[in-house]
Image: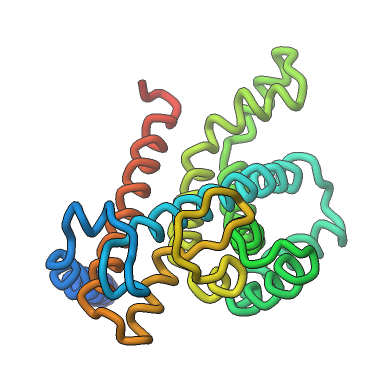
Amino acid sequence: MRRAQERAARVLLLVLSLLVLAALAAILLHVLTRGFKALSLAFLLESPRRAGREGGILDPVVATGYVSALALLLAVPVGVGSAIYLSEYARRGPLVGIARFGIDALAGIPSIIFGLFGLSFFVIGLGLGWSVLSGALTLTLMLLPTIVRISEEAIRAVPRPYREGSLALGATRWQTIHLVVLPNAAPGILTGVILSIGRAAGETAAVILTAGSALGVPLTPLDPARTLSVHLYVLATEGLSESRAYGTAAVLILGILAVNIAIAMLSRRLKPGRA
């Protein structure tokens, strides 16, 4: 009886896993097969013309990299630093519980709410206008919960004997953290960064309200920008060019996939014991 239940459970889990993979494959196949028809060197290197009906996607590609990189540059140090404090320094108590509850609650807020906050606070309140900086600051708030929680779990997963051995050899607490704990937690922390990259590059609602949708290559953080996801949204909803919409989607998917693979390879190299 137990063996039959075990087999049934394994078959059920296998079927569910295959369903997830099939759904993912169907989406990728649909987007990439249509998107590849629009891909060319000119499509990647030319600026959009006639609101996107003609030309390429150079401006949105640059804007996406600009906004995402700036958001990660702001979010990763703050998020990892917060995770270090919560896991290594903070004592158990109501304040720590409230902080963790706040982080979890922040992770569940819809992106449009972040966009409205960014619009009222960064764009209007601080006078930054629709700009790369406003979009990056709004994305930073969105990415922090993911980075903090995943980094905290990665740091907590480092075996305690590692810390005790370092302290027994005379290392200070901070030396133990940045020479022993963080190198061993690096693969897990990079997992949080990978998830953050995908969300930063693919976010639309929050970005269109804070970075704007103006075409043109942003030269400074105070320039408006149209990211790939916003460009895709405009092309699809306004019916400007279906083929270019699929091409933009394909570039976005392949770009995120390439970055994820690169960081995953770096994460594997950073594992202790690997050259």
